[in-house]
Amino acid sequence: MLLQENIPLAPLTTLRLGGPARFFVEAKSISDVQEAVAFAQARKLAVFILGGGSNLVVADNGWPGLVLKVAISGIEEHPENAQGETLFDVGAGEYWDRFVAHAVRAQCAGVECLSGIPGSVGGTPVQNVGAYGQEVSETIESVQVFDLKDGQVRDLCSEACGFTYRSSIFNTSERGRFVILRVSYRLTRGGEPRLDYADLKRHFEGRETRPNLAETRAAVRHIRARKGMLIVEGDPDCQSAGSFFKNPVLSEQQHEDLAGRAAAKGLTLPSYPALEKSRKVSAAWLVEKSGFARGYGFGNVGISSKHALAIVNRGGATAAEVLALKGEIQQRVEELWEVRLEPEPVMVGF
Image 1 (cartoon, rainbow, N blue to C red):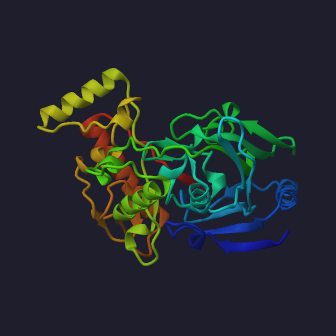
Image 2: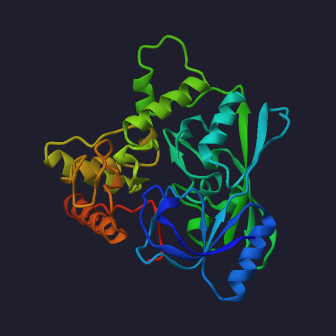
Image 3: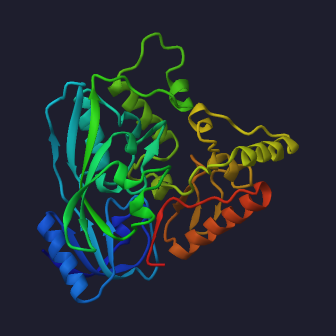
């Protein structure tokens, strides 16, 4: 285990801001994780687990304890079962989109719509990562974890992870308890791509043949790039934490009330099949209709010119500036629509 001190965290995040870690370890094995945790516990240091850094806002003062970056790699493919399913056992430190590309090349369906999402494999169960009609909880078989409570390595089945929309035990009831080491995904070999989402339907509109997995992956990456949600070096809209707010999930009555408020303003609440199932509404629509157009901003922070949900660091931004814009958006949306937007990124060191 290589222990480092006062390591800047901003370069390790896609938002490119925040202060340093007092102590830092990049763990490439389970033994590295165990040794790092023992060091932190002996000194009563708080531990923060860092993955790909794509869904974080790090405080300007940084993290006063130990930042443990899990860098366990490897993609192990198990033989296909009688149902045509293939199990992939993936290290938490693997880059997520690399695994998606691997699965698509293997003609295995289940994660193709999650192409282009930045970050590491270990981060995907934490917030039940989803996009374009798919969520990782649909394919996760189990999650191997190191339990900080008793020092044991164990496997948690999908049900034990408590997956709901953008949520799991890892960011709710058991936040801070587990270090994710590996994730197992059960995918369908030869399966059809998921094409439920409106953006994908529009992309393939007029096409006579059904797109394959590779074409669907390419389409998703194209759509994400158009919205500034694909990390491209040099693109100022990519210096963000991705979607900053979750799509609100409303009750039937809340949804009716919101539609009524929209109608009173001469607006129609957008309706998408992928959202209607659980009465989710578009956070991007709420943000834009509250006066925060794409490209809005002041000083060093703003909203992406390509997507209303991405708060971007225009250069030299502080975490305090990002949180000020977040608060302004939340307040305005709640005043106009009586809906409280919940942030999606993890707040570190606040």
